[in-house]
Length: 440
Image (cartoon, rainbow, N blue to C red):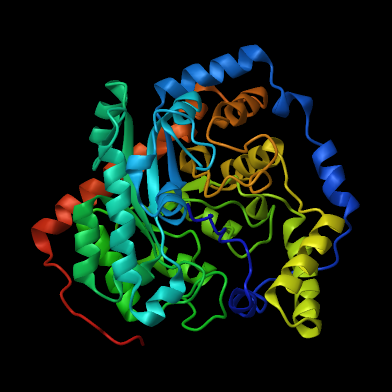
């Protein structure tokens, strides 16, 4: 069985891609320990009554998570061979399985279709995306506990039947390879959002973690967003630059989502959402789905990453082999622990988004993509732990109605509006058929 290679490991190529975009200042290792110690006992070991109340509300909601990378793990770890897996039992090498999804009270899960953005340069991203769609659809159809959903009504119906509703999200516009026809095929296969970019710029949209090139969307990028509106597919603004966020909100006719993003004001990582964009959510009707990945939660992360980047640059200058570099950075990380954050920190992001955008514009997009023990914040390490976050929100005074909205009803409301817009546009607009329109 091939060993899973984490996307977070930085090769020489990834190092060159990322060092120019990470920002930050000095970081003191003791602040990591202080952050963990600062976690309240209530958030890590909640009042049993609050936890029970949270579980009951999540079963009712339904709980919708808009981002999980299991399809990539099925390909990377098992080469797509589902016959060797019994997903009705706990699978420790994977980030999700049926028993743990049930324990976490998941009612609907978006499975992410992800291909490394470098594949666009070799014109293989569309091919690789089809492999991801194939394994995701085979997985959904392999279990009587799962059923594919295509609409908000489907989510409600499947949840009420006792099964887990499954949807698909395309994590990066590079996978359509500039083809509106490919976008439409993705929609036919069940994709209900597309993240406009991933880590790298496209020739029609800027990413958050690349150098500004277009300062937002090009003309073709605007036409892609409008075609997504016509189809009935959310424009997902996680991973895109702030200018691309603003341009999309200017041209979209339907609500947008951030499938796995947090508040920039609390963690100044370029992947997070600035306040001026959060303030646009009420008029748009969109939803920001908060993320559990340490990098996008902990306020100390950008400083730590800047320090790590400098250490890695030094290692590349002094050492000749990947093995020596890997050992050197592992030793550095051991001496400078990764700032993880806690359930309480994730709840702080929820608080901030509620303050700026309102409680009607918050959802959940955990972004589970590996089984590493320190990828996610303390207390939200795997898909069984969602109730603990909601117990913390209840402890902070969130009402039952607030919890139901954040858990999934905000997403359903936005989805129904997106579907309504699509139905209206399909009566008056033809499909976008222009292939290869050059960026402007």
